[in-house]
Image (tube, rainbow, N blue to C red):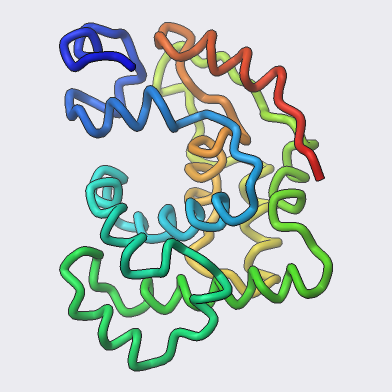
Length: 205
């Protein structure tokens, strides 16, 4: 682990600024390939909560979201009722937006429906990148896109399966965060390690 003094001196992608929580997320989570379907589901739901807000707002409330939404267990979430929605509207640990709260429940139902139809969620998502991370080599933040052909295709397919808050920009942020796309800048201290992790990644289905 990197201590706070050493962490502050590292060169990293500029979007995480000087916030220590944001820096730890950048260094240890962002861009690392995720292969577990339920973990991918949880991150997709969290990214949907970000719509119209900054990611740090959601990151600071991540523990609150996990407590509120049964650790994003789809099998528990499908049993949430209108009463649960009302209860969560009073939960200060999350962003109290009715449509966003309802979206997590709706997305859980879509996830379970896919599973019951024999469609593996991780395999479905990784299929948009050919089952391997897309490794980029951006030098400046201004070069990094906000959406791509792959994120637009993912967005369309997710919506067809009943998911919402999954527009192409949200999908691209999700792809970056879960390592489907490796978008650390070339000058970032994480670039080489994340590139090597991406290049050695194999999705087991």
